[in-house]
Image (cartoon, rainbow, N blue to C red):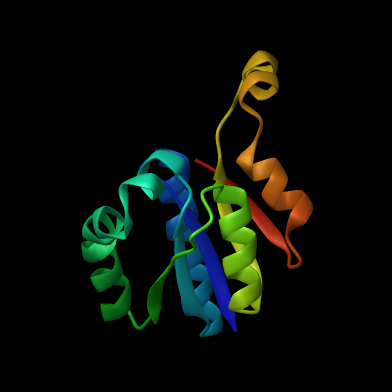
Length: 127
């Protein structure tokens, strides 16, 4: 089985990756890391791989099987849901941060869309 971690270069993103790593290690699942930052997703896979390379190496040394999930979809929530379905994920782990009501209204919520559209359980981690 697979655990999907939604990573971003933020405290909630790092918390989600750490929790997903612990969960995958505990259950013996494969860990697939998906970048949830649309700006970085547009920059390309190489930048994401460079940033996550050291983290992935440490996780593999701890006994995890780690891979980077990539999708041509530009919308982060669609990409996460698609990758989770492709890998038959049993769990998606994402980080949350506090947002004002106006911020939610103007920007929408990637986390909310993942929660509503995912076909597997979603664990929200607060940093």
